[in-house]
Length: 372
Image (cartoon, rainbow, N blue to C red; front, side, top):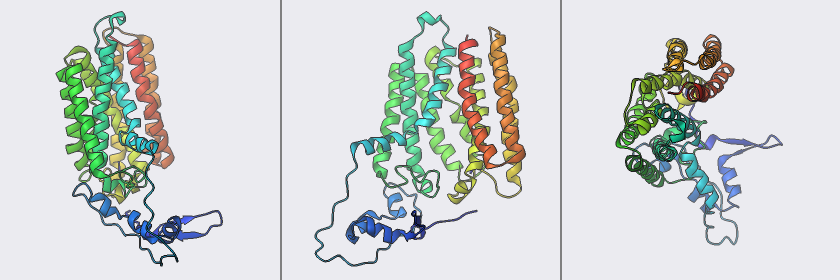
């Protein structure tokens, strides 16, 4: 899911409506109002930013400023402070809210399907506790992941705008922010829900950060490794509702596990040059790449058919649910097949959109028509 073209900061060119270009050093001096001291302070290199919180450092070309102080220049102007709104927005981005949306849906589905009683007795408060604790842990995981990969994020166009990669936040602040959210979420789940849900959340965090994250730079099998913690949210929801994990819980786990392969293959193909630039091995190089992409897209899509229909039938067969699940699988398979045959950016984007529509729709059908 991830040929190499390293771009130094000194080579950045910015175009305007008159099709003129400015080098980054001249532009920085202009933005500083002719004050090189301000630029020298703000133009930190990528290596300095990455070195602020750990050992992951990459070399980056510093911005060199040539010029003289204007006549009558006074003391260097202080850096403009971030507004509260900008700071809140950056910390919000650290939590990866778009990922948390799918995590919340998967956790909710597991919780709902595991509840054995009637809807009139549904434990809404426990559900709120479960979602809040799970999202806290997921948010902390997202922040810690960006802390670990900050130097590599800065090398990818897709992620270079992230708050830490762009240098808008300090690594130490992001580290403690992630630790605080993860710890708070784990403790909250243990106290407000149950120990099993908390343990599953902790296992997800540890395996994602210390197993999947480093493996991404070593082998294309990282997709398989990452799918293991990625499919945990419905298990957390199931454990929160029932206090145990049944066979049905693992069926839902298998659905989310399989779904991740075509979903991430689409992302990896769209940003394959970006991943390669940062040294990620999400896709193999050479002739093996096309075969791996095809297999990791087509086989999981085919496997989704029997597993999703098995859960749709469940203990209370619902023909309408089965038809809906079948149609969803056919649509998902259609876009996956087009991607396998064409392997184009357009086909990858359409598969990505189809995957985002498929998962919530499948869980909605299972919850509304195929519940226990």
